[in-house]
Length: 175
Image 1 (cartoon, rainbow, N blue to C red):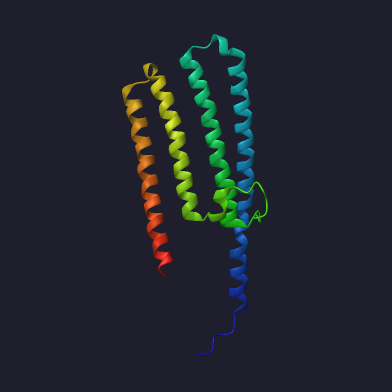
Image 2: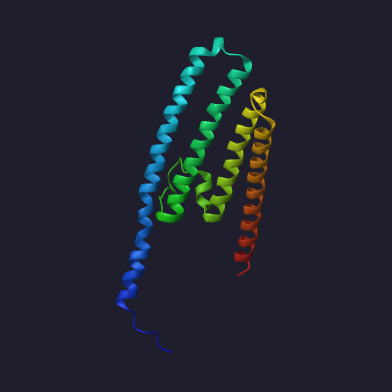
């Protein structure tokens, strides 16, 4: 059978839909701005740590350092979303010959990105939970229990996403 002649309206609609992916580019630029805010927040907290370290208790010092780690982990999450999301959904970055290309970027897809993001969220949640445990005398048991449940939900969700991605990847490799 002969294929029908291409409809110009259908072709134009397809081009518009394909071009619409560029509407996400400003969102990634916005996330870069948000990362700048986190850098500022990190520097403020670091300055506070450096200038008050001798007056802090061990627990206060640990809580500030965990706060710094939390900011770094959120910044890492932002980088994964910005770079991985842009590469997956908007356009190639063409970094193959760049010496600083992240190792994970060469095999990123939507499934891998979701699992990496879920793993990063578990790390961030772990830091928050550790902060809660260190500062437990100032927290109520319902608050601590809720944070544990939320953390376990993140862990279970990440496991389920990784399992789902593994199953779908196995299905693609057999076809």
